[in-house]
Image (cartoon, rainbow, N blue to C red; front, side, top):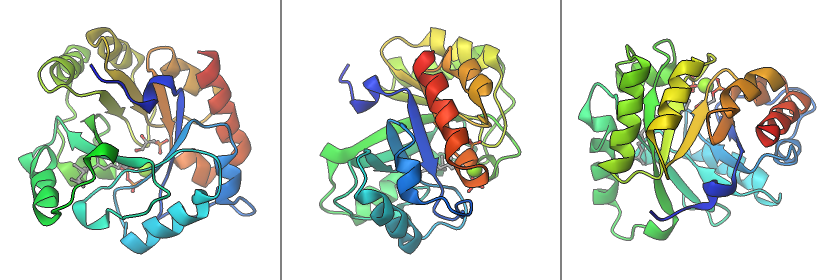
Length: 234
Ligand SMILES: CC(C)=CCC/C(C)=C/CC/C(C)=C/CC/C(C)=C/COP(=O)(O)OP(=O)(O)O
Ligand SMILES: O=P(O)(O)OC[C@@H](O)CO
Ligand SMILES: [Mg+2]
């Protein structure tokens, strides 16, 4: 299976263009936390203008930048981006979030930049998160269900990334462990509720890459650094 830059990552910082930074914190400070990559994205309130502003603010700093669009109309064409990580939600309630939005996107673009485009096979796990409501995800899943989704993603759909998304709450270790055991070459991303060294370590023991989001907006740089350290130690 082809590999990607994420093979060498431990930590991603996800910056939400619709959220403020804590007082005194700059995008440059967040780029300098030691994170391996920055994903720019969020579910609600996203516009091209907000996306551009964050990408431009991070562009001069030495960290790979990726856009993670929540819909085709917010995809931006910005050379500072290494590329696009496009979600597809395996447990979505509507096929629109599995292949429909993707079809619409490709249909409107006659010059797709495939060399910079990858997919992330999401399994959305927190029913309270905006992303669960947005995609009408079926979050009522046992570890064995999640493991099966992960195996299907790798073996049947050739996905290079499986993303366990607990956005806003810390996940169940048994679920993350089951998913990690179900896949071989595919890289396991885990995101949701990571807020300190220990919570980062608990997920990084099973996930290949941990994704930290709201912490950057709520707490700032030191808290994010702790999670980078945990990801590296794992
Ligand atoms: C085909 C294209 C270009 C886009 C569609 C991509 C899809 C299927 C998006 C589905 C939704 C999704 C998985 C978005 C990714 C970003 C994400 C999960 C953000 C975090 O969500 P929350 O934390 O719930 O949202 P807020 O923090 O904005 O409330
Ligand atoms: O904001 P948190 O809860 O850290 O979640 C990170 C990321 O998985 C959200 O898409
Ligand atoms: Mg969020």
